[in-house]
Length: 127
Length: 295
Figure 1 (spheres, chains in turn cyan, red):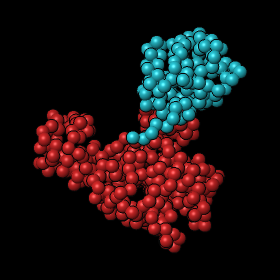
Figure 2: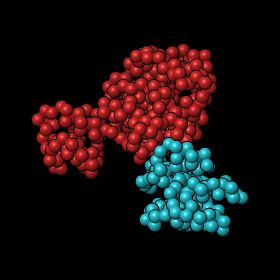
Figure 3: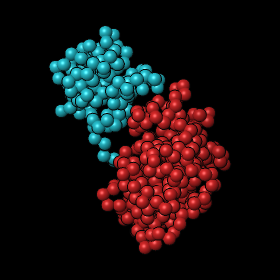
Figure 4: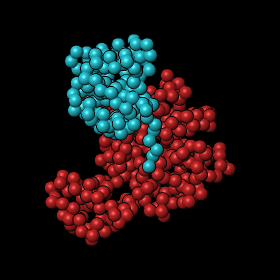
């Protein structure tokens, strides 16, 4: 089963994301900031990371930099999921190695579309 | 909603748009028409029907519009756009190499996501289309929907369904809460109001027709009629792309499935493959030499 690390300082957001991603067939690990997420990654890299930007201790942008420099750290698909909606933030994230970008608020359709976009889930068979 | 109101709405929709609602689509009517009745200051669907029966053509037009507007998003279903990029366009690049023009029709263009997805796909082909005349005609029955398509303005929600983030960055501008597709991409698409039930031969002949997720709403005879007329405006070596739930099989022989390319069809009679020249310029010849397609 594919694993997804959900990084967000809001327990509510983590819970919603968990429910959506479990529905898409992922096994979920949660972290409440970038530093804790990094610890998770050091124990074993996930297939995907759903990543908030603004968090205490270490933000998502800094976490992404550390992750991409780890051995094998280029492998996980990283999807930002943040209230930062401006083009400047999106470009910064892509330059730092993010694969996709979700602007909050999000729902199942958006998460599924974005995970499909980066090849983490199959294109749903049309009805 | 009373059964007689439902029957009345079914009949009107059939007459005005060809929309063929089965007997159990009350929820669809309610979800589309309750907001409309509220917007019009009416108490509900019964009052809406009264106004229609009283001869209010503007209410009737709005009802038809509300019922025929379909969900759409960028690169919807993905696969048809892969076929467009990987199979259809490479064939056209060869077949039209001397004429260097391609005409594409989005027959249910809706709010623009499909024609603009095609425009972006073409733009991504870059130098391969340098110097080509590219026409994308988007038609829809609804003036309101076409207006939205022309503006090319989309909500944050709309740009997150189907549109890769790199495409958003590359082809959109942020304007407040909304995202607007670049003028260069907008200029690649011409808009026309059109009811598929009516004659569309004046649009000329097309190399590619996207007619997705609209025929499912028509009854069998209407579908057959539309397929036959679509065949007349498809170049003999052209392509027809239908929605995932749609097919010509069992309805008509004028198109046949393109093997291994689900949803793609080709005219069945290829005998006259070359001499028929598409009526370029049958549409207002606002030249779409598409500056953007030059390298």
